[in-house]
Figure 1 (cartoon, one colour):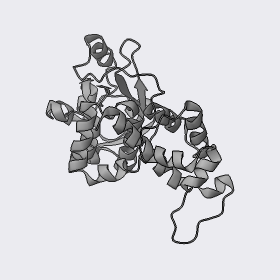
Figure 2 (spheres, rainbow, N blue to C red):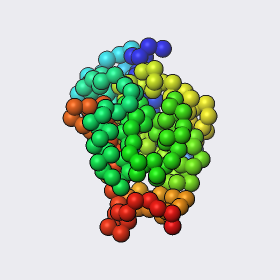
Figure 3 (cartoon, rainbow, N blue to C red):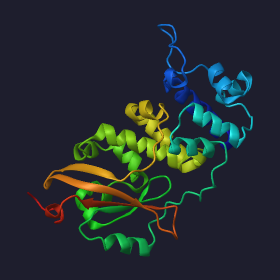
Figure 4 (cartoon, rainbow, N blue to C red):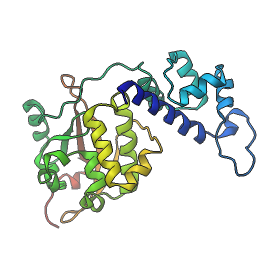
Length: 272
């Protein structure tokens, strides 16, 4: 498949998933007969958006048609997409700004110096495909495997779904892993056919049933700073606030920082 056909197929699958999810009463429509799927019918979406049922069906089928931005905006409104989901839809259709190619070389020296300067606050750097390309000593204390795994496996999404120690470390693995899927999908909307991302997804589908189930629901979520709880084997229960930054000179990289919730927890990790 070409990159364009990959995006069309994903756009169609995403629309189907969101159409089947939306509550019918949002548009004042009666419930479907018992035993029928919930959500809207294709003909109902087409009528609400002012397009033909044939055209909308082709859109969900991934046919080579070119929807206008106005029509996509109408579909997003009809399906009650979130702002992040709306941007994801536009990105799949080619309306989002182009993104830089994925680069996975080690973090530049100035970014490594920045996260090292954070001292006791764990921090790491992600490339566009979520490869971990830099980290500080505090993060290595929180998650020692980051320095031990093979470079080819040093990817946040891969480790979340394949490293048993991550499940032990995370207080809410099910919630966090699901959220990561949505955040990752939102970030790679226009680059699903890039070799590093395509290969990562194929490898994950092959080894993790949980990844397959979660990915196939087409989750999309924007990043939000939030509380994260870890169960460290020696330091015990740790509470942090999770932040994400993008350097202006390297917007293809994400810097993830964990800041302690309370001053009493600001000390570096030490055996209990």
